[in-house]
Image (cartoon, rainbow, N blue to C red; front, side):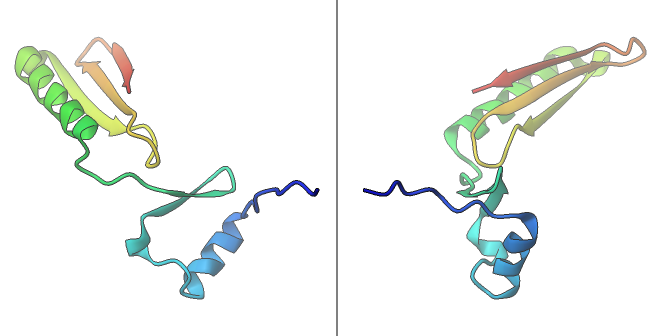
Length: 97
């Protein structure tokens, strides 16, 4: 019995799939380490929760720091929250999820 190995795509092949119409911008597909991965939908409960945490931190810290939230990757629900202290150059990042 032969083992099945997945096809890994190069960036040029990924772009060619788009050019040929196999993939469109509306497909929500991303190339990660050669694999075509379906991106999670925006607005998942985890993403909403991360946004609420950023908003609450912004309210608590006010002008003392800048709060930034960013999805870690498009294919997961992991979310990075950074607290940037003004004038001090202090950065704290937490990876949620």
